[in-house]
Image: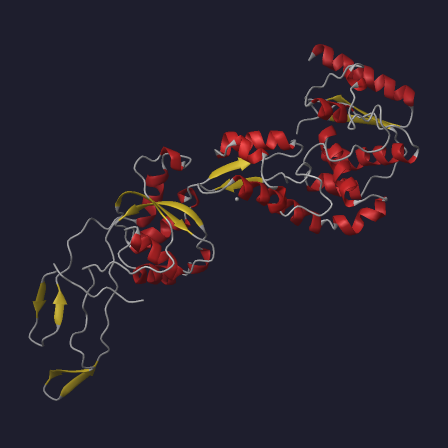
Length: 413
């Protein structure tokens, strides 16, 4: 049975701005000189034209953490639209207009320039995000950013993370960039079903940029593992994970464990384990074998049934994947010598399940372990690994024939 290989106040100082006074004494600000008011949406495409964002590739980029409290830089680009402190202003003989004085918040024009990386922390409000962007020089004021999010009705769509923006952006353009998925400074790592823990760590190190030794040596007490887990093997749930520049090895591994916990809760793993006369850890172990043996999704419940049928008769499982796990190897060719390797994971020599999972299963494999198919099979062979064709039987003679089919396949492939 061969093995298959497989996220405050507004600006007040107006120094440097020319003003013209009309006859009524109302101040009318001379429009500020700025860059062209380009379409903010085009900035996203221009900035992202280079493809995948990698913060390590940005030379001279500045990372600005979100401050807890920080004053806003006062700019000189607001527009004074109602003068005097009085709320009643004479505009003609006997005529009065009631007006409420207010200032439009400072804002930049155009798309900005240069590069800056800004971090938005979890739980940040639109005002806090605006303060961070103001401190980084991205927008002119927090209020202009807040107004832009309100006008676009997107305040609830702001997400934590690191974002690559430009300095001197119009608030609306900054909002558009924050909402564009490609603005995130993040590395994505996809972990497929059936990978072993060491393979997962190597992939995260290679694609996520985290030190391999740190991944291997994470403190398991900080991961939120289930009480029944004996280590991380089996609990690094296959999915695509987003790794921020400041993510630690513990952060990433804990996210994988958390995702497993979610899946286990959804399938009611702990509650349903007694239905198949197993402990929760044993269910994960069966699922890991099912996942490692591979085949098509529809075969998973059948593989689980073969395991349970053999265990019910006290037969050794004799699964090649357990031997290969003991040897830290991956191959379709398992020799008789391999089946004699001394290891608690060698199910040719030891009855029952191995002491723990041999891979990290996905939700379908977990479901198969809890919902085995009905059948009297005691053997199965993946006779055509390329097309994932697996045959099941309750007769040893058929098993031998299926094994010969596999050997023929291996001899020509």
